[in-house]
Every structure is written in structure tokens, then in C-alpha cells.
Image 1 (cartoon, rainbow, N blue to C red):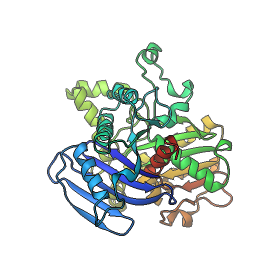
Image 2: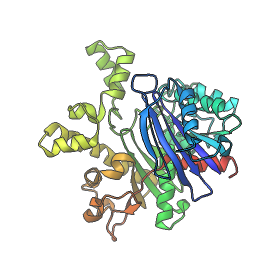
Image 3: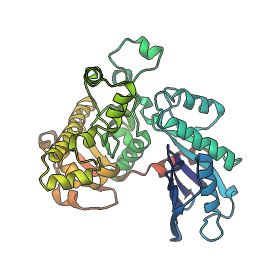
Image 4: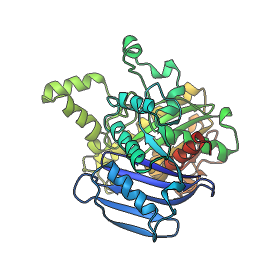
Length: 401
């Protein structure tokens, strides 16, 4: 079964084509970026070793899916004889609210639910829908499957998802914690359990998805029990450009003393805060901040310390909520690649059962691996996330493949 995975954003469309029957082989992958602005270009590579990058005439998601489809069947660099070989298209969708708790076949009802969540995910859901509608028009007859970031967290109990606000704001307006990065958290927690040789149902796992966006999830018995992001992806640990947890009164205070409006503060907290705001070097990339800190930049060193401390606090809190911990997983860009970050997060946590093996932690690898000592009470692992593969697996499952 050949599955096309599409991740449509505001100005980009990522894609990966899998042959699920041939050991989940990646047939082709690529990205169209800067859609709708100058310099629109496409990166493309396939399993045969063909690679290309260059300008494309793409103005919207429909154009993007059309160009992708043409490349996949190109006589020279294509990987399928015709589009009829594609049996399903899987789409990453950020917000499904309470009505979607698993990957689903896209119907008019599902699209309506997706639209209802526009207000809670204005930067993502409209573009996710555009990707679906583009696939419906270009890949006629190919079923579409929606894989929602919020779905994995639908198992959270009220004690973890309700806020301390009037209950009718939940019952009537559905204001609650939803959580995000669910596809990644589901994938790496399952992979960690498999690598450890134990069933997920028997384990208490904390997964730390640490990229430009970051979230921590407590996984009990293979199901999400609590997670750091909330109604929106702004809540939780400090991130690349997001503030994470903050006293709500700070917002009103900033508006008053700076004369800012709602949109200004929203932009401040989502795009100008976090590591970017704390480090003050004009970059939210942890590699740049680490480099500057190593050269003596005290603000950057402080930013890294705060970032690691907030992650450490969540890990400790979730150990308490789970009643213990079997495995801690680091994943995503920084989690997988920054040995410094991992060491900083676990600094001083020996008393809670963590013993990091420095030599193992310093090894750079794209493989799943254990980085704790053999006698560490809590097993610490690095598990590379693969959201595209997870979406392809869910899509094949929904379609009966």
C-alpha cells in the first residue's frame, strides 16, 4: 500500500511517499516552501538517489499538491507509474477539539470539526484543511485520512485537562487543556517500549519533545495522562520563541504599561519570547545560543539554564503524577541532537533515579539508544521521532492496509 503523507503549513507543504508493504520504504520526500511569496522553491529526493532543488510556480496548497503529484510520476525522477498507485493520503492536523480522538477518514463532518477549531489553532488548522482540499481535487478518488495532534491526548482525565476557571467555560465553550505534538509523543513512547522489550501497558514513560516548539507528556500504560501544552501550544515549557507558562496577570500588565493590544501581546508571547527573547542574540536556534554561551555570553548561558530548569520541573512533576517512572525519552531536534541540553536537564536529578552515562550521551547518532548507565533506576533514551511514518501507519490502519 503506497501512502502519501502531506503536512501543509502557512507557507510550506512537506510530503513523503511511503511503500508500506515494502518495509515502510520511503519512496520520495520533499518540501515546497515560501508559498505565496518571492522565492518559492521545491526540494525533492527519492530512494534511487535523485535529488533536486529549484524554483517552482506555486501560489497555494492546490498548486503545491499538483506539482508534487507531477514530480512523483515524472518519467525520469518519479517513483510511481501513475497516481492510481497511491492508495491513501495522510494529513497532519493540529487541532481536533474533543470530537476527534483517533485518526479518521476525512468526511464533510470531519472537515466541519476541523473548521470549528480554527479559533483555537488559527495558524495551523486553516492550512491543514487547505492541504486536504487540495489533495481531494488533485488526487481524485484517493481517500484522505486526518491524523490529529490532539488525538493522543484525548485519554487525559478531567483532573489533568480542566483549568481552575468557571466550569461553564468548559461545558459551554470547551476551554480546556488539549495538548499537541500528540503524533510524536505516541510514536516515541511506543518505540521506546518496543526497544526496551516491554509492553507499553506496563510502563510509566515521560516523553520530552524538544524542538523549536516543545512539550512534555506523561504516558501511563501507553496512554497520554498529562501534557504541558494547553488550549493552545503556548502553554508549558519555555520554547524557541514561545514564553511557555506565565502569570496571566503579566499579560494585562504588559498591555497597560506598553500600550499594546491583543494582537501585539499575542505576537510578543508566541514569536518574540522564549529562548529568543531571553538570549537576545536574534536567534531561537539552540545551536546558536549554545555557541554564544560557550564564548562567554552570560545572557545565553542564563537562557539555557532557564530552559533546562523548566523542562526539569515538568519531569519532576510528572514523575509525581505517574507515581514513579520507568523511561524518560528525549526526542525532536534539540532533544535528539543536543547532548548539552540533555545533561543540563538531568543535572542534580540523581536522587530521583537518573544516572546519565556521559560517553553514551555524547555519541551522535540517528538511532534509538539508551544514554543512562546500566544501574540507573530510570532508563533514559533518545528516540528519533518520525511523525511522517506515524501518519503513514495510522493512514494505512484506517484504510485497512
